[in-house]
Image (tube, rainbow, N blue to C red; front, side, top):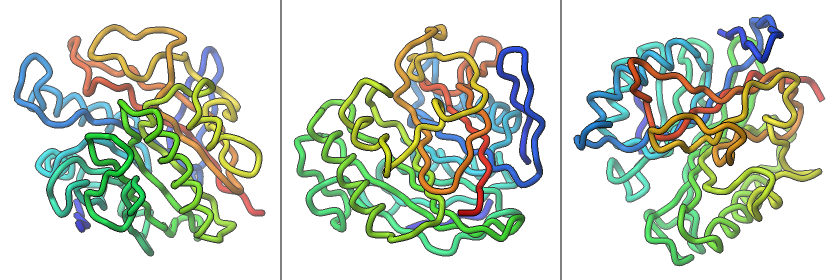
Length: 282
């Protein structure tokens, strides 16, 4: 278990702009691609690009996937305005993290926990649905000091190989969210390894009474690209497998797939997705 202490923005969607309100919330989901020393996309090369991208976009809350412990410590050094919460999917500092980064001047974590996507969610590193990679969830209950409102932020990474595991993961997430028995806003982000609008996990999660997709709910949207690009050129109108979902009193003002690169180098093999939201009273 690890807690490490380490503005809203203006979104342009087509030809229209939405001016930021100080109380708006900027949320990002970002598959970091685990740290590797293998060229041409080794982490030491990608690290300054990731830093530049995050500084430019300036999200308030970031749900990351695939980050390794040393990699996350690097980001904490590069982004001193943020703190982070997470644990390795293999326990402690081992394996990939679903690390949640947050602006430490704005947010106070009130509670946090982790569970594994398996039939034994409390067993660290458990995997019972045929997937070789252990999969998990990190969630945090935050107090937004600026607005005095509370919210839940949930970060996950579904399996990339086993369809049954993805479906069971969606069902388990819904069960665990239901157990919170809360009317507070819940923001669920992650790499779901399933196409938005065309997969069973999406059908289970995005429906009346459950979650809303920030992309389709947004008042303004940027260009649609496949969020997994494998360090290749952006593919228009491709599959969105990285989602930001919300439940409860949340108004989504804008959403964008961030195709930032620097000197031809992308910060990851996934494009981050960012949404600007406004938490509303019931």
